[in-house]
Amino acid sequence: MVTAPGRLHLGVGGLPPGPSVVAIGQFDGVHMGHRRLVAEAVRRADRLGVPAGAVTFDRHPAAVLAPDREPATLTGLDEKAELLASCGVDFVLALPLSPDLLRTSAADFVTDLLAGALDCRAVVVGTNFRFGHRAAGDPALLGELGRSHGMDVVVADLVDVAGRPVSSTRIRAEIAAGRVRSAARLLGRPHRVGAVVTGSRGRRCAVRLGTGTARPGSGRYRVSVDTGDRPGARLDTTDPAAVTLELCDGTAPARGTRLWLGLLTELG
Image 1 (cartoon, one colour):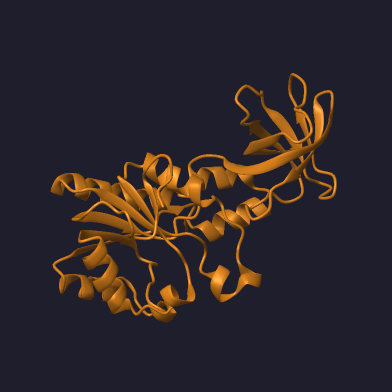
Image 2 (spheres, rainbow, N blue to C red):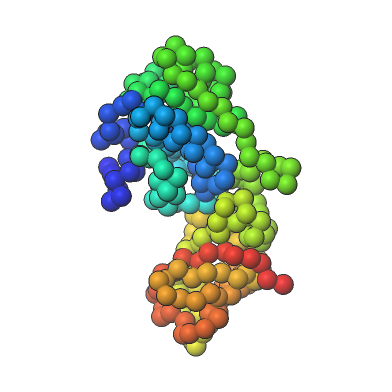
């Protein structure tokens, strides 16, 4: 399956023929650390004159291994693919996560996917990358296996901000604690949450925030409203059962309107 932009492939079917250079990761949020990995893959692909790709997964491994502990995502799959494409890759491969995939040995992952289906000339990963059954593979093993297939393996250091590595886990924690400005700094853009208007009057409306995506903790926030021509607004989540949105100008959208809210900063 390929999406309308033509760059997201669900599974290896329909992939352009190799060779290629890829960055691999969960890439939830496509934060500043992820973008560094992808930029390195694009640079190397350009130098070799081959397509650059990003290899990810259609959902978090916890969705299969421990569904009750699956974390809220920072980006859905389509948004993730759009963000990765904006980094310059020619294709995004989302591997459908399944028990069979999680049982794949590290050696088979390299032989069948990286050397086989993708014909990789180089692979870029972070220092915390793990792969294969029970996450037995690490960057050192990837380098060893890659060399046997004539594949360069580039291991990029994690990006530090304020003395700590940037990670999707850290960003989720910032959002849950209401520190949305900090989360935006780590992401390189405001985090977005979906919402549906459940009632409106004047400039104020009641909204239901989407599930599955990381939502801000209890507080008041300045947000952008992505409906094409809406001004900014204030989001109030202090009562989880009565979340409200107040536009700074204009009339609130009608009941049933779907919105994307960009979390800009927390308000006192």
